[in-house]
Length: 211
Image 1: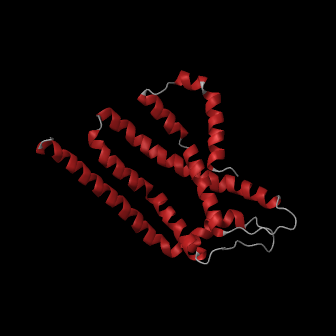
Image 2: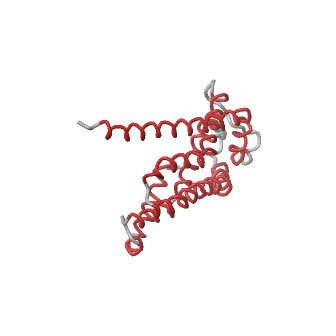
Image 3: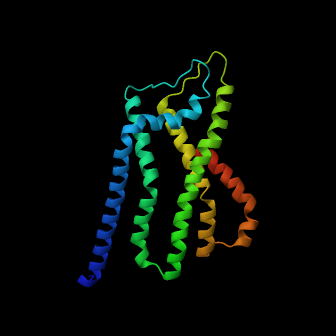
């Protein structure tokens, strides 16, 4: 049986983990409460790339009674997590840092910062570059006799999938650095596998969002 001295560090680690999780949750809730009043404006901003390209007279619709209320709140909650990501990552860092070597600490902090920045860049790229192209194409090829009316909840699910896909795609440099750092692969091996990686990335993109 483990001694009292052996169980105490485990308990202290669990307590520390609980405290870090609670702080992250509180941070998300604080941001959510600050943004919830603007939930409608946030949804208007996210839906703008489609609304601007809808055919004349067309509007977005709600096919569920509660959608006009819950859909903006859902988006606001996700946006709150998005805004709180730096603080959440700091809590992760504060939890794992005591167990890292000095040279590992020097690497982890830049990686956490760059991964956050790259994810934000991926989301921005999706919104400002991809959305106008995608929605412009979809609205242009709508079938004759078919009224173009997008459900607000379906639209949110669609754009969130794209945000996630491009956010993850922009994390590839960080993933490569981690793989090389841990010894899982090396530069020469990556060069040889480049065609397979490209094909795999395309397949993953279709798996995340077939449309």
